[in-house]
Image (tube, rainbow, N blue to C red; front, top):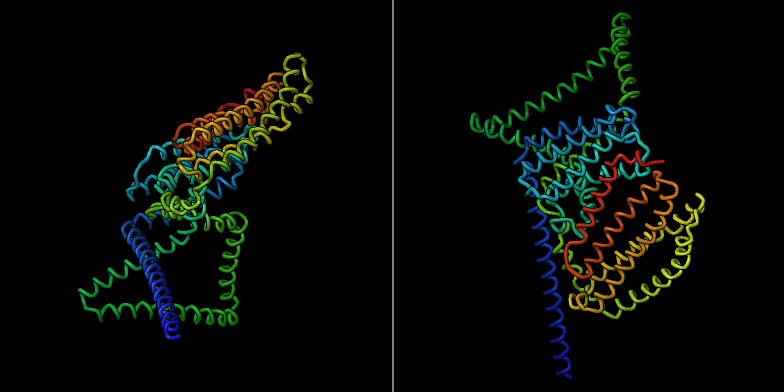
Length: 489
């Protein structure tokens, strides 16, 4: 009995020691995390103090910058469909100013200049030139063009401020976009207020040092009290003066007319402001805070919230996709695709060989049927390929059988592009280009080049996703720059 009791006590003691050890580890982690947060906050404040003049100027200019963006670019009705080239000049002016501010901040905060940043800067400028030149043309991609213009601006800031998760464009592009659209601007949303507060704090500290040197600490305390007395006295004077004015206005009609005249003048000014610019001024306040958080906050931020190394460490336990799973999934897909291609060839080849001229409705139905469904299949193939390449262990993804299956999947993607392109070519050959057919042609060209890159990635390791990002952004801007209206029927 005693031995059993002693054994239980030993086990209980060991359990307590383990719990205490775990608790101590947890406290150490919490202390390290707190120290890390404190260090980041101190670094943040230090970088604000070091560049306080630049930040103060940017805070003042941000109000005008944001108002110009709201008034001329967004509410000017000239972004895509403007009739005057002078009106369409505003997005180009805003872009040049924006690029200048971003480059100024990046240089001031000693951000590394990368060729990728130059690439996206050029794309952003070309996109604004496209709006300037062809803003009033029929363009089915107009809503997407507006989104692309903003997206290029945000992504350019993230690249220029060296805040990409992997240092360059990568498979973590979603997090990079999240950094530019949400984390940077909203994480630094009150940067304008903090800058003003830091400037006031720096001024009071310098004043305190000067007064301490000249007349000691007591003179500084007297000066602070004097400021408080002046403010309190001014507030009391306003209240008492307003009461006295109201009483005297009741005693003398001429005196009351002076007050009525002043009141009517302010009332008219307020009404005019509400009719013309009140909404724009209100909207410019959050927009200015967003732009300041994006650009100035990006310059102050030292490293991204999520790094590729941290993400890889997080995902390492899950990167063990077995070869059998890859073989089953890709094998089933390839069999389905083979059956689909056979049925398509049986229906498509007779039309080509017969030389029969289809009517416009028949050609449209033939070309459009399944177009976007096949594009979604293409995206599925891309995602599946990258999923396998990332989550399969190196020895599995490098296995010859896996590489062969992925190669067949890439070839199938090329066949899907070829099938859609053949149908579209037949349609355009018979009835010419329209705006939507041009968009479809751009999609097919981009998809075809992407399929070639993904196929090459299945056989050789290189930054494929980075090239896909460059390809999509560059091809879109190139399409926007072309005088496509010359091709329309």
